[in-house]
Length: 56
Image (cartoon, rainbow, N blue to C red; front, side, top):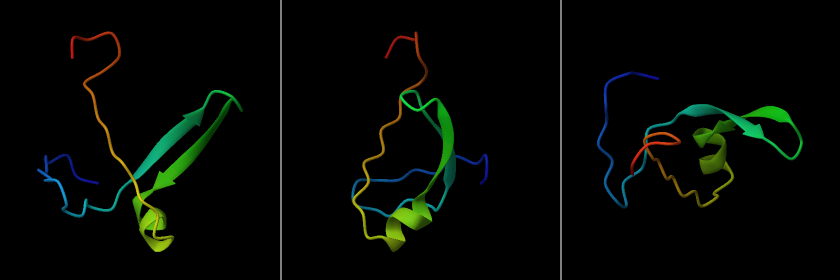
């Protein structure tokens, strides 16, 4: 992944990426892969916000 910001508009495909996830109900870490989501033909909604405890 690159640190260069990319603007993605509604309806465009996002660049492939992976994220570390955390499931508090299981107390386990995991991985999210956009490539896997696309292979499985799953709908994905991406929502980003600055950070917890900041004004949004």
